Length: 115
Length: 113
Image 1 (cartoon, one colour):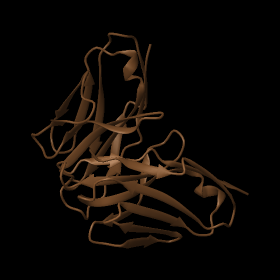
Image 2 (tube, helix red, strand yellow):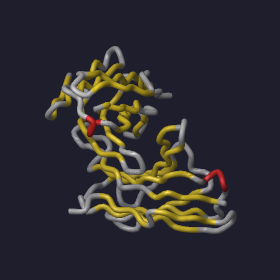
Image 3 (cartoon, chains in turn brown, purple):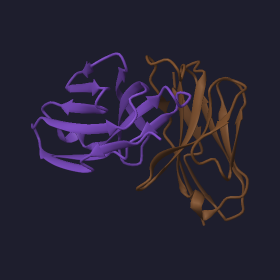
Image 4 (cartoon, chains in turn purple, blue):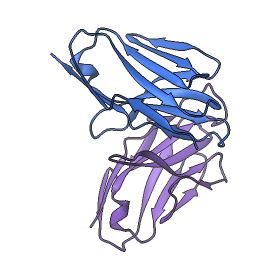
């Protein structure tokens, strides 16, 4: 049981390049999330997927797109990377976002630098 | 909009001390509150989850309390150890915002041997 896994762990991009961050969970969770963590800004929600087949914008969605490929996988795409997207990206999941008994579990993060 | 505040931002204590970390939130319409630990360069590890109907949860040397009406939670760490050094974050999951979570900025704890 690996929990939430993310690839890659580190990435350096040039401005304008594109890339996809991958996330997978093996806990049969319905809800999945993408956050970014920046010094002084805390964790901010980029996009989330309440259940397979649905996605919604979070607090900071501009410059990103997501795909809920199946129940296990939720990817985040940067179409044209900008230096402002330099950050640490975390994927998370929970069984049911509207059930108070379920914890949120996080992946190890992807450290992205855009030059 | 929900706001989550953690005070203090940083705390340094000698080994063996008991300590309390604070988390306050502005909107009491929550499903739950979760405390996390984050080590440098790592992801978030869940420590305790308190459902909105609960007052406290305990795990080993950790005890978390929740007072929803006043918008406050505390994380009590007993007999602190150098291995407890990390950043501690709290997150509230909002019942009026499609179950999305808002995080505090964290308290960075250093326990000196």
